[in-house]
Length: 557
Image (cartoon, helix red, strand yellow):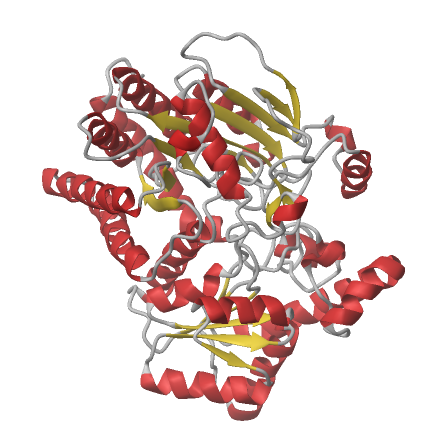
């Protein structure tokens, strides 16, 4: 992506949007840039290359440019929205083939993806809080976290494990993807056999060394090997486990069966799709069986929102609790780990320095740290202070580990108070010339208000409304008239087409008083919409957050 001032645009906002689109298609960022896919195997930015002007975007196609008021969004995006009865996987395949719809994932189709940094941060926070929940501390020396996938999103797991201070063991069937992450330094060492991998795990556990091991092989081979090792020796080698295969598209390359090599799978999924589906489902049953054996001995496993539980259940795996065909043995990570953090209003707040100048990013890092430190100094509840401290630490780790891929971007988790204060401080720095160019503020759709997803973001809502999509729709509508520069709403993302409705925004800070007003108003709604919904369901964290907000914000009732 070029610095925003180099784009032939009439406004700074339009130039910033162009910068974001180009960053989402940067070969260093995108998974398949020539196919317009940013991440997740099929998460597209646009439907095709034949576009030059846009304001209203319908599933990757420009509908037209329309006159609007100065405070209106410059860009409105919808992706994959269909009549509910026509939202099956088969419907998607047909509509995608016709070119009338597309799968925008979450941040790909809203031009807000910032490379793997976002998921590195999210995984770091998740694993850290999982450790707190399970062991009472975030100190993870000598602990082992096992998962799968080193692709566009899942590739973050290895780096996150090292930042958390534990031993990350990540299986990957695609040698090219594994070598790419190793070359980038995200995977510390590569293991090509099960015996070698187990030997390395034992060595690093003994030394308490933070390291990431990339296992070249199928995740089922690894899980079954760990379970067999326990049965033979009584030694439990893994404390934490999850999965990040792309099970939102299980039969089109998102999940590779253990019975086939990677190359065989690519051939058979095309030539014999029914056989491939049967092998995938058999593999899922074996996958779950191995996890069950280790979980019975004390390993803590969670679903990472990739539809693992959903597809395992559909495959007939032993994934449900006794006397139930709807309650899973294992929690979604939102249910068990991140849900309470969302209910405090914390979520993935991110920004892009559209000048392209690394010095601007360094300055924003310092501004954000100062804002959070000042908030702690003013006094906040202990559970909020803990999250601020985690994210202050993250900013330093992100710089140390060179997290920037593509544009000069950063992510952290913050609540309403932190997000508004950081945005206003950024805008002031642009106004005074401390920062060279505009900053685009955005977030992952995976947030407190942005997504209705019963198997992920809203899985800890227990009043029956987890299957309702009002929150995500209300969120994008509210953001659109409170100052957002662009808004988007998607069907699909993370857990798959037809399983989730999610939305996002972008707001460009350009140093003007209007940008201050827009940021303060829009961020208030973008956070409190979801907190309020969670409060209505009886979540105590959300109730406390709403009460605090009502003290701070005039006319909030």
